[in-house]
Length: 210
Length: 210
Image 1 (tube, rainbow over the protein chains, first blue to last red):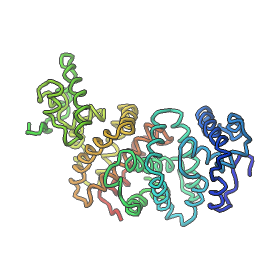
Image 2: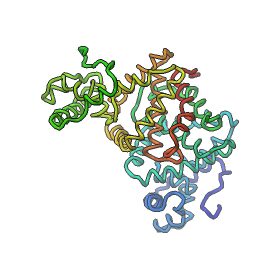
Image 3: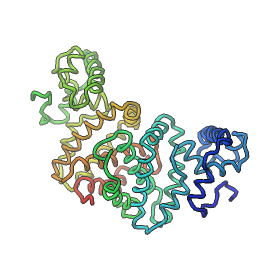
Image 4: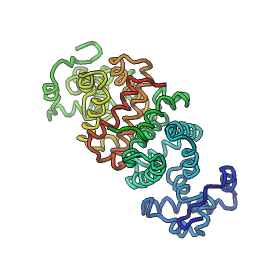
């Protein structure tokens, strides 16, 4: 485990999932960490919020963050974004394949996971962003780190602009499929969406932006 | 004026703007129509809400809808979507040019108008969609009519899917630029955004969707 609270992600996903399985005895710790994390992220932004500060506010050992959430990213994803997955684990999955199919993996993975979590997760995310200026900043910090990590691995120029263009497509897809529920996109088959959207996202990731 | 309450759009924009200029004496009528429209659109959806029903609820003559808002579309745009422009007038502008530059006109026109209205309009729109299931339906009906009219003019197959894909890109652009305010997209020059986004939107409008 490194000093910034990130755990190694070389262990396989199944082990990770078991290790984080909810144990009734620890639920108080987990809940306290989530509540502390919401406050500390809102007060200090994503980069300014340390694992140590969150653990101190929750009154537990800093190792509990890694035990329950795998990493600061994982805690943020579950406490603030309420995402049903660990972003570090997701990064591993998305990086695993040819660069020119990165967009295809992103679209397929996000839609599949959002679908299986039910649209409610996305609605809650958008509400929190529209309701609190601070949540927008925190989400932006997080997205920036997440997509910059992805984009830097394919080595394209202008990663910041590419990151926000990707965000515009994926956030808009979530809005239309889960929040506004425009048909046919709201119920369209995942693979139809992948074929329609992935080439556009791939252009944002690695193409000529004009 | 046709039986469905649409006015001719052959008069030029300047005349239209003057005709709709706010006159203190009529503000009560205008306000009453906006309030009535919100209720009737929410109760009956976009298609089910008639100009006559809205005027009756507001206690004014149906001709007042056209006088103050130009059309049912204009009333909807201003009462429910709080858009700072008349969608029929916008359709004319967007249709005026080569088909293969339609996306460029859409991106440039929307961003320019949203920018000049301030991001608040977009935030209000998203809040109303996330806050009320009904608002989502009404917005979808409207978007469907608006983009279907645009897409049918370029004659591509599968207009419904194309319409929702376009909506996903434009709604996401609004979310990222005005609500979450991701940099650099939040403050990026309009023409940079046009060059980056228009080719993607054009593919959704007329390209091969796979």
